[in-house]
Amino acid sequence: MNEPFPGRPSIKKFGLSKLRGGYEQFRDFSREERDHLNTRFKNIILNVGLVTLAAAVDREAWNEMIIGTLKDEFGKPEEYCFVKCVDIVLETIRSSRKPSEKIHFFFDLELRHQFQQLADLYLDQPDKYPEIDGISFAPVREVVALQGADLIASETYQFAQAWLKDRQNPKAHPQFQDFIYRPLSKGVILEKEQIAAMIAAVHELKRATS
Image (cartoon, rainbow, N blue to C red; front, side):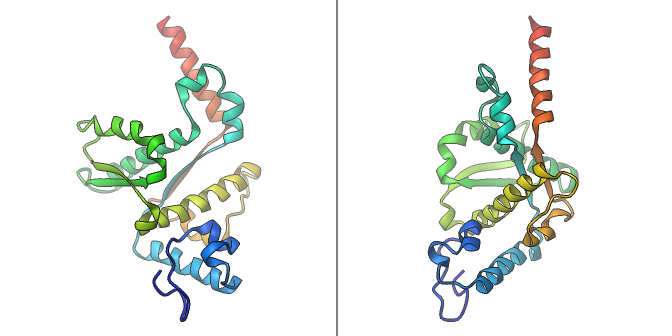
């Protein structure tokens, strides 16, 4: 970050989409330099052994099926992803690591207004979620780990789009190949069939309680 290349200014904030597109602070970098930076940043994540977890939603199917009163019951797809990511992290800790291991979540400060209420729901249940040491929101520019999360999120977004188009043979970006099949790494995509099952379950619960 401080010295991407000899004679180049430091990188204030790593963003994968801007890097690959050659925008803003990367506009004077050649394609080869940008590819090299992408590889270096990716390898840091791989070499320190971080577990990469991600969740995605087929927004087109969600908007088509979650309508009317269902919007109030299911909320927004981003909220589903928030909850799913937190749950996947907790499942990973409980199944593959020490159950008592503590974790502190950090999210983009710009998303605080959208996710603070959900964060409070987890924090208000310490007996159910003893692993959660805290949930904070911080500026991405000041937390390099969040910039690493941006890399994973951007790659997951692109891979999810490819998977929805061709589920048998989705084409991942070459830089993302190393992440897909790593131990403990996990990615989930909420697709049309699963959304339909969620809606059916809600209707069945209403019938059972009416």
